[in-house]
Image (cartoon, rainbow, N blue to C red; front, side):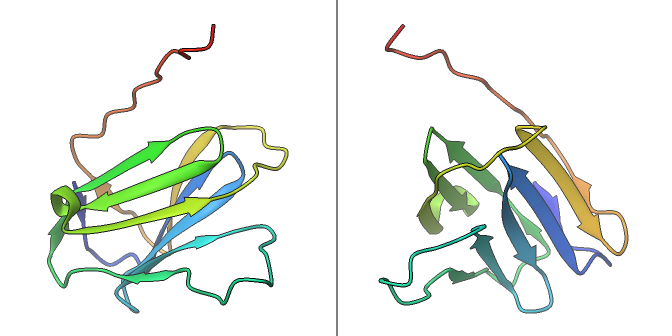
Length: 112
């Protein structure tokens, strides 16, 4: 659960790529380090206007799927990861962001 507070932005960095929750614009977007110019820019997704949001991320080799409030809003993004030091990071700006009941699961590959 993510609680909207005084933070303007919540950054979830996945393998060097940034998923941004912009509370002032009431949207989330995936900021690719580089993206194709062949497809129009459709990276912003509106968020529900609620004080608390349930956020579920499913991350694979190249896709990221985002589910808000049990799938009421969902989006999929595809990317090729760049070099990164940490596979998963969370930051907020300019103040702290409360995240409740955070769980991280690493699934084993079916190809091993």
